[in-house]
Image (cartoon, rainbow, N blue to C red):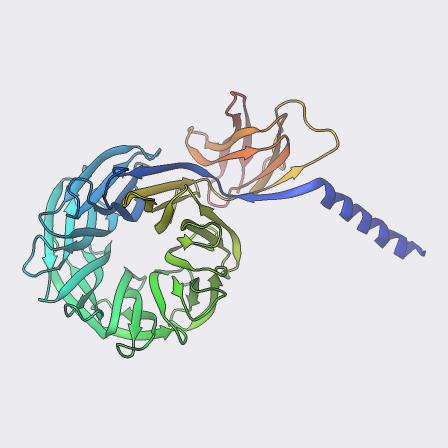
Length: 490
């Protein structure tokens, strides 16, 4: 064997050895799961929208039969950062009232939209509710045309008013028109637009140019298959362009967001593509709505996608439900890179049927999900709230000398810009928490993990943070703690 071949052979052996002593761990763990409702009865409670609030807690809206079976009310729930209830508010009358979307407003209060059968001038009207920071009603508005209307999405606009996306339809027709309503800060209508063709609108938001983007679905005729429908308007709600995206079977676009490149990301459910009965469908477009790529996620059963958000790293997170892993329906969380390639996915199975309706990335780079959990044999459904850790990508170094004590090493490089790595070890299996603090003591990143005995490395990315001193802390459920200092210089 010549010298060159010998060197290549040796490098290959070294590479194989490195693979044999190191395992890559990529995970997102559940920090806590909360349910809201009454188990053991015939009550239907569901969470449809969630957002982290200014105080690091969470606001959830949805519906409840908790206080009156078969009489549905809009439900607003405020929790602290640990998911414990601070207060709840019930909005409704003697009829069917339901909440679909909530957002904290710039004054610290909340704006909600949904549908009311108890109030308004018609059978079912769009309902808009403004509250203060304690959830007390400041004003309510209803919007109707004599048909059947629901508000499914609401957002505060840059002028302090609100934009509502929903639909209006003739009773019993099954499908109607997308309805876009613009109000002032007091909820009074400035204008309303309809977009027709056997369709429904699900979500919308104001875009960077002051216009609006709407997602939903459309049919060419009542008996045709439905397609994703993407509508772009100007600031007055007048159509700039529309796009239909779909195949030969039904496809439903439930969620849209403008991305940092001024294009759009859509998520929903496809029956036309993928590998099963239905799959989660992710579609990325450019600023004109032309498709750049599409991705499906699912197995041989059926999976549903309901909510998408672009994440801090430029990728995307989706929630919905999956049947593929167990015999029950589970909440499904999918994380992708910026090209829509799956990085990881996690099913949350708490022994019942669960569904994720809304997901947001939280300030610690973890995720908050709301939806429902359904109890077998009781016809009882509760609001579900799940908080996860951030995604952890780290290396466990399985050396021949396994650690016999806890240890936290100094990070390297130090000072650093923008990334640094530190190692830690534990002598036995247990729950550990890695926390990053600013010099003022504020936690800016925290990960809780269940790990085996071993040595691990952790990478901290300071891209989003300013020059200064930071601390990293290694603590265990058994009581061990260690902390070190590091310096970020930009």
